[in-house]
Image 1: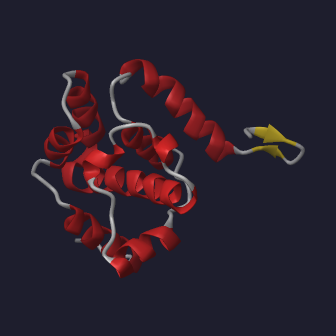
Image 2: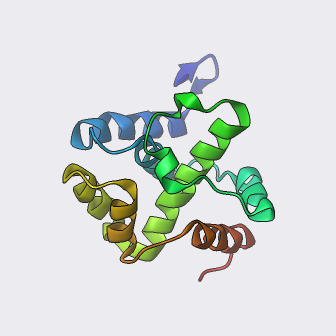
Length: 144
């Protein structure tokens, strides 16, 4: 909920505003991209608990598994999908710089799949293991 008895939740407003702007620009981009960019733009709380579990258990969802709807996920799996989406966008921003989001957006507009868009945005191919290494550094507050 955006507004309630306690006022307006500005992070939710930023998140939903980003969706409203991104959806017409990237109708074919996968759910992970939309959710990850919205979480990043809203500066939502990092999903440190889930990220820590991903690192501890050496677990990530195959990137292509996030191409479709998140409706197939339930409970903890949905949390993992949202947390990983956020992490993937943050990794893109770290590796690809200020243009990473625009680069991925352009790739998706041209019909690229997740692997291709990630490679273009990150300026190189990335793996799930590299995502975990990024998360480990992020959790520890270290730069690469």
